[in-house]
Amino acid sequence: QVQLVESGGGLVQAGGSLRLSCAASGRTFGSYTMAWFRQAPGKEREFVSAISASGRSTYYADSLKGRFTISRDNAKNTVYLQMNSLKPEDTAVYYCAADRVMRPDRRDEYGYWGQGTQVTVSS
Image: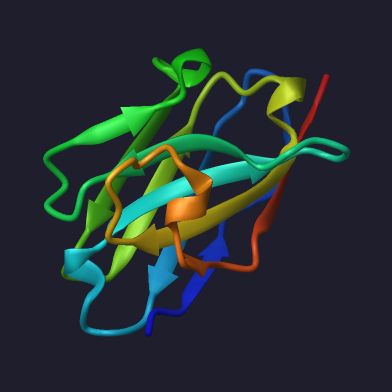
């Protein structure tokens, strides 16, 4: 079992930055792919980024490459999402997810989810 708790969301102006954190419980953190998804009002939850268990491989939604950076610290059981040059269209609830997956960008492959953290970007 893994429990995930996100933090770091908030209100930021366009062009600003935020760093989200996701703290995981359990001794199996280091064996899971970790991912971030987001869901804007009225839209489906979409893939943002993922990082392999070792941290050697990272994946990004094409539209976010260059602005977002995912990282993990297995000693602290934490995954991070650094978000730069934020835009109003980045406004969403951001969710952390974990599991052993074949397709890191597939929402339905993740069995463990956090409660989400709100990110609001004002224009």
